[in-house]
Image (cartoon, rainbow, N blue to C red):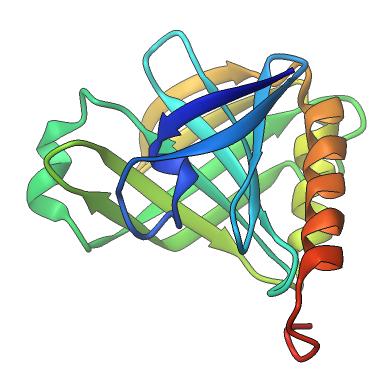
Length: 176
């Protein structure tokens, strides 16, 4: 039911290090929890790891993309870039998402891109990912890939449950 994983996603997306976390496989997505957020992620055919994060205390969502083949981004560490998601599905109301202030994050082990959507859009973003059947990702106008999001509905339900559990376990009464 749970597996130990060592990944970039186990840590805060803005700090690249490897730590172990418990991850639960839900409909092909791995769902895991840290001390401040929960995330669901999957490695796709072209080597891109896609992670959707939910920060329940801050009430915002995020997207992280990682690929070991993106070494050319090493020299752009810390720079901002644009990320655009185009979602398809019959019931997706908000089918285009973008962040023109996404960050390129790189160290000698891993290279990735991290985008965020604030509390005003968190519920709509999560609902859009749940209902989407597929997603195209563009970074700086370049097509990163077209991804099948089957299983994202159940995985997002587990992600929201993870967030609720995280809030219940939070000892700081001023955190939310």
